[in-house]
Amino acid sequence: MWRDYLYDDHVMLSHVSADGDQGFPGEVAVNVTIRLTDDNEIELNFTAKVKGKATPINLTTHPYFNLAGHVCFQSQMSLYDFYIEIFACFLYLISSEFFLLLVGSQYT
Image (cartoon, rainbow, N blue to C red):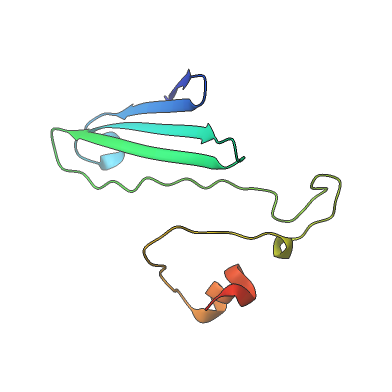
């Protein structure tokens, strides 16, 4: 069960996974902080602390936004009307066709 905490400028979700939960060793305490900035950016911050035993951790989220453009702010925008900026040290290229599908002509 996740617990939620509402603050002035963000929401925090917390969960404790017991040792052995879903077959993973060690107790894991996870916090997810979600904040909307003054520039209308969504900030997601994930933290996890493990107690007792080493365990693999790979925290992620899968937010699904309206990239199909279904009546998006009274317009008919498509996926190609949006831009994405990924702040990363590197990108793993699965295949050029797959990656070009994601980023279109902006890929260099």
